Image 1 (cartoon, rainbow, N blue to C red):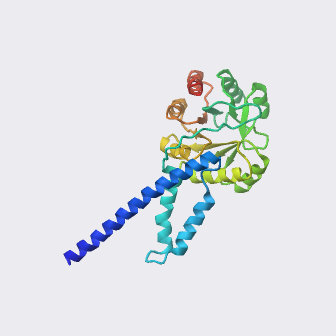
Image 2: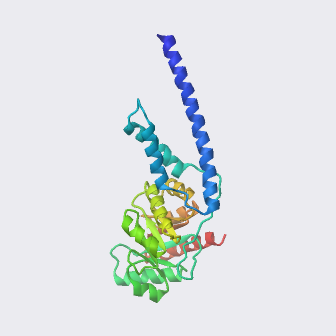
Image 3: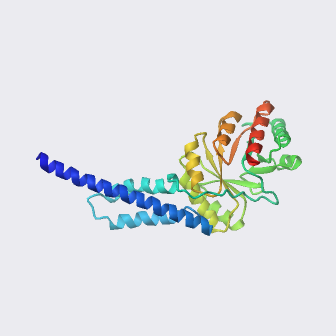
Length: 279
């Protein structure tokens, strides 16, 4: 009995070694594919191909694993190679073109405090302008026009149109309109959804794209940043200290509430962003 069990374990070990070799081979091929895509200027992530691959694998599976078990095993592998595997090809960040301006990265997108009065919004806008900022997330068109700021918003008149990744119908319409779009996700695990939304915009001809992922934890947005040529902004709940930390960690920009009663810390954030942009 012991000899038979050892023999079976030996066969399992050999299968495991073959699986490891095949994963390494897949990593090498994925790296080559990413480089070819970058050279050709095509999207790095193809959600349709990932779905087709999974369907093909399920169709050819004859057991003993069920289709559901195969899907649970394969999906994390595909997600890893789509988002987490780091190939050696360098990434050149593409700026979103807004009118005649092509703001240098990193960006700081200022958001007035929740429930801010009109007076507080004006204070925020003036502080952003004095600090050399460009972006203000607000529905107040007249305020941005007076202060010479680019407006980030969800309405059609925004300079940079913020759209959630779940609004697929709107994304398809925007792709045809060639708007400058900031794609936003509801959680740090939404990287694949952001990439799928990017692919929808690109298929329609839109290239003026930036991505926004919430959370100060660098691992999530670094994985996303490695899989796209577009800028990845970190949307933060914390204050300017967390924002400066995100910029030091390599974020292309930050989106956060700005407190007009703390002008010194806000100015320090913009100086940090400007210092990185000129390096």
